[in-house]
View 1 (cartoon, rainbow, N blue to C red):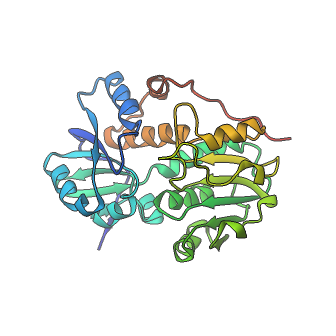
View 2: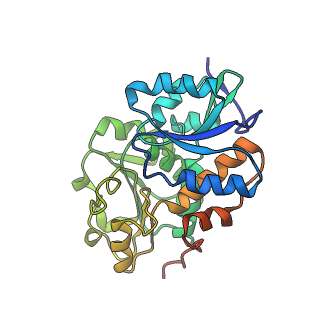
View 3: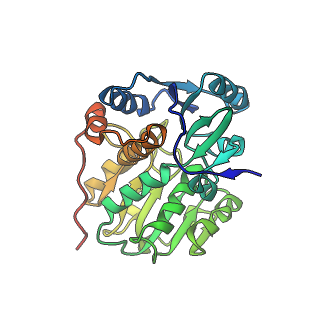
Length: 291
């Protein structure tokens, strides 16, 4: 039986890594190495590009080296199945984005929930004026659904999940406390009622001009949250801002989930200012409430 543990490493990792495919574009090493240097820790954070078929052997190598770290697409759900000990956040999302070792035991946690909640609070400080539409049904979407259920800003909103596969969308229903309607196709979404749209798909990750839904389809009161991130902002976010919509890509989420992970590994928070400075992007403020 899997043991549920507190989100705190008993022993700090000797090295850190981001595991996924692809990971060349990940900014996690940039912000984490800056935070590590600022904290005076002789730990280096690197990238590990791993195919799904090679994840098991790669995790064995990380165990032998006592390397902790983060997990990104497409391995978050698979890493959950590999972890012998998990935190409550990982159990609820059924996905792992942060891990460490307790002896030879893999411990999985999910700090994406922290990152989503911070970004939703910044985008929707006055509450969500309508439905929340979540695009996607993978590990990242699971963290979004849990964060939405926990946030007081969205607790009373109707949450809709749009996915290419209805069965995957239906799997997420319980994560929102029974308030989610699973939708099979984007064409089923009542866009006129959308108050917040969250992109939890890979749209825009490889092709920067790829957008999950045209911003012209969204009403003037809709906030846009793209989990994909770029230093210059994603095309979808830039389009939304051009229309006057409050919008953010995944940079705030990246920093906040990274800061939460750092605290789990080392028992102390990192400097968020140092992380933002390393990214070369000004630390953003919260958005003004919509009139």
